[in-house]
Amino acid sequence: MNDHAHIDEHRDDEGAKTGMWIFIFTELILFGGLFITYSIYRYLNPEAFHLAASELDTFIGTVNTVILLVSSMTIAMSISAIQFKNKKLTLILMGITIFLAIIFMVNKYFEWSGKISHGIYPGSEILQEASQGEILFFGLYYAMTGLHALHIIIGVAFIAYVMRMVVKDEIQHDNFVILENSGLYWHLVDLIWIFLFPLFYLIT
Image 1 (cartoon, helix red, strand yellow):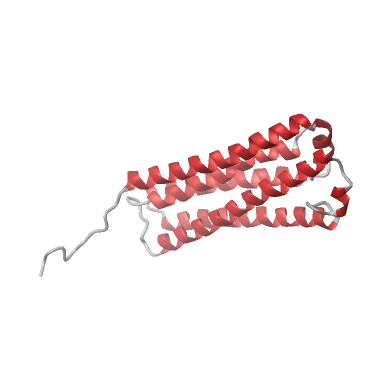
Image 2: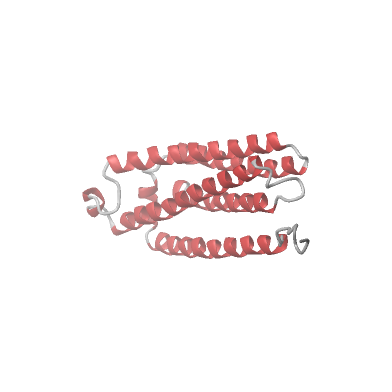
């Protein structure tokens, strides 16, 4: 019986790309709203925000910025590698991206734990004695960097899933849209941090 004995999965590459761009747009709206909220509170509490920002470690923030920029480069290079039919290099570059993401999260863990150990977290006695502006700053800091960290975790899971597809040859030089989409998502994560870093760490 030959009716549809060999059924190819219907590939809608343009639809997949469009869906990812729509998702990215909704994420930008979400973070855009948070950035606007931050800007309003910063305008109303400039001195308190400046004082609170001095508690953050600019060096760690800078290192994490470099880490994410490099990881964006490696995920982009992995897409080029699969187009050149270099499966091994593709996997290496994706693995480096995940490794860099883990380093970012480890740095963020030590940064957060350092602040928490010093009693600087929402609801702590130290912050309850601080000004309203400082309370708002750290509330936004934990909320926005925490949401970003969640996106990092999702991104790592997404890239790991795509790596598995590459290993199983489900992604090849002529069928790599899902790899492109994982790259787009990772660039979104990078872009969000590019805004978060100066807002919280370089505020003057």
